[in-house]
Length: 307
Image (cartoon, rainbow, N blue to C red; front, side, top):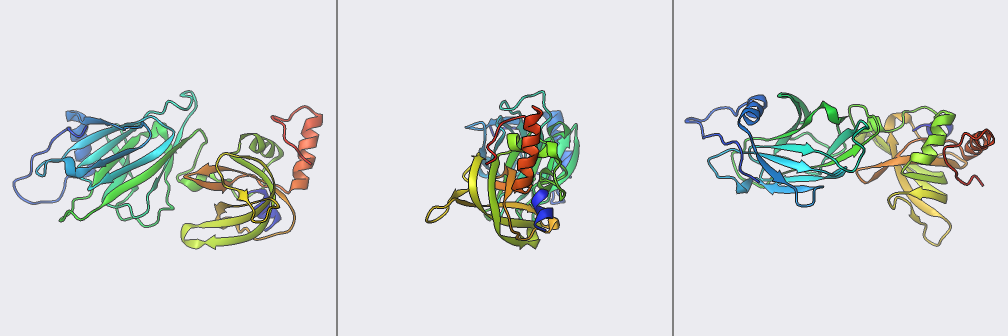
């Protein structure tokens, strides 16, 4: 957290015959190379944003690789009874191709049955291993770094397993995971504050009512009372019972050490996987001073009420 943290403290594809005797499964790289050399069948999503499939559609004695094509900036992949592998191709038509894109993926709760790799020109880098705990992990990478290769883990039984994850594309540069999209634990500069007011998914004036910490997720949740709602893309903030403003919650990094504090702040931030993440959060009186100074010099990138 920036200012407030400091101020407050189809399915047909390449086929592999069953080996004559049991043995360890082929390494993912060998499986991938077989696909790249031999080709793989294509499976297009029904709504171009999300895809659902099942390994039960495969012939029992064969392994297959499916090509899945998605063309949205956000969606979900769900693969029940995973067998073989998926190659997930993200080719968005909703964002400018001239801007570099960052892709983040977040496993659905109880996702199991496959590992997810980043693949480019036959090279694989593990992103999420089958069985990794916690849906809070959301690795991010530049879309130019490669695509997603999802390999099913061989199973001795056909007990129900579903591999699933959400994906999200953004034009913002990110670190190795979703936390890299959050503001670091330092105050924003004047320029950053003014840009945040114009470009954030939510901009509100309010106070911190409480802070709860979630060490297992390395996150802190800030509970806000909002006196003025400038903008919000999703319904993060809802009318308070009995009137008198709005209430909502935003997340930030645990390492920022946020604690409740007095006074009003201008809270800005972005939505990621349906959750609000905090960006710049200067004290409101400081924002008023910065905004009016920029207004006098004609440097404001957009207009917003400061009273």
